[in-house]
Image: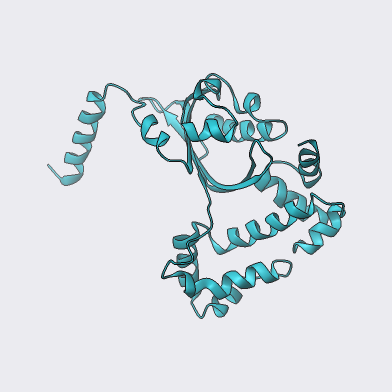
Length: 251
């Protein structure tokens, strides 16, 4: 029997012996920077970890169970999260490292990388979904590799309002395109393009707390026009810039 078949047999045997298929829940409770959840075919929370409960402003996980994202998160964010769930549940789409800006209960923004996978039964039918969302903390500047990309990061933070290309960032860091992509993902868990988006939208979210027009903010943050800015903002944050401004003012 080949190693692959031995592994497959061992995997099937272990799966049949496990008494609780949700054994991973307490493991994810121990990860304060990772949200974990499992939802049923209707998009209702079946398993969550404590980090998600805290992110939603709840003391206990029980307050989430049986509810959909639309019932947990304020509109229009909840509607956006639920629509994303339906893509996974209805079409089997996998969400891969989706950069998202979340608003926490105190209205402070927080950046996350989200992944969602459909859950299938023995016949291949979709019966639910599982997902994780990892908080993006600042990179460790003591990381030995950080100094290699520091000039490129500095360029992004200083020139985010201008057109920045991957070859330009690579030249600034004295690297090849492949090298700078590899270092960015190792240090920041982001691609260079995601870093540019993150930096631009962080600046935009700060400006939206003031009185500048959305068009002026779009231009200041490197977007060619109002519609391009709105599309990117909505794809990442889940609401339009104007809706985000209202959420901030309702806090």
